[in-house]
Length: 294
Image (spheres, rainbow, N blue to C red):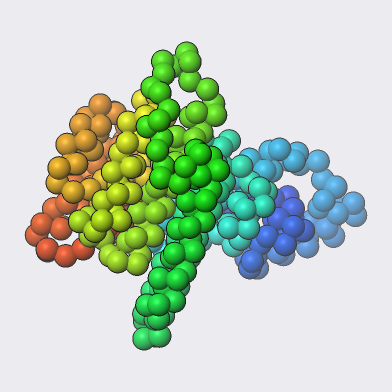
C-alpha cells in the first residue's frame, strides 16, 4: 500500500473514533468533509453506523500505525498519517502484538527515536542544534527503553539468550513476544545511537546493540517469525562490523522471501558505501521502497 494514498483512505468510522479520542493531529480536509456529510445524510450520526465493530477498528488502526511507523523508521523521515502514533501506542489504543508480535512499548520507542531524529535535522538546518540537549533527550529515551526491558526480561541488558531454544511445539506466545519485542527495542537503541553519533559500526554503543540484536535473532524459534523483524534485521545488518557480515548473509541465504532478499541487498549496499566512501552509512542512505521492510 502506498502510504501517501492511505492517508485519504482511512475509513470514515476510523477517523470518527480516533477524532473522538483526540488522537488525530490534523485531518485531511476531504476526510473531515466526508465525516460531516455522513452526519448530515444519516440523522443517527456517524458514531451509530454499524459499519465496523470495535475490535476491527482497533486492528485496522494498529495496522496503519505499524505500517506508518516502520516506513518512517525505514526512511528516517516523519510519519505520513495524521495520527499521534506515540500516544496511541502508550495508551494501548492499538495493539502491535496482533499485527507483528511486538509489544507496544518497543514500537513506541521506535517512534520516539524517529521524532528525535526529525527534531535534530530541523534544528541542524536552522543552525540551532544543542548537542547537550540532543544527548539529554537521547539519554532519557535510552533509559526508558532499558527500564521497559528490565520489566519484561528481568534485566536491562537484553539478555534474551538466557531463554532456552525450544522446539516449535514447546514455544509459548509469551516467549515469542519477548524475543520479537527485544529485537525491536534493541534496534531502536541502534537507531538512537546513530541519531546521536552517526552510522559508525565501530562505536562501542552501536557494536553492543548490534551484537545483542544478533543474539536475539538467533533465539527466534521458527524461521517464519523472521518475517516480523525485517526492519530490525536490516538496521542491525547495516551497522554490523565485518566479522558479523557472515551472520546476515547466511541468514539471508536460508530465508527465501522478497523482503529478506531486499533487506540483504540494502545491507550489502550499505557495506559497500561505507568502504567506497569511507563515511558513516545507515539503512536510509540506500535508495529503496520502505514497504519492503514492513
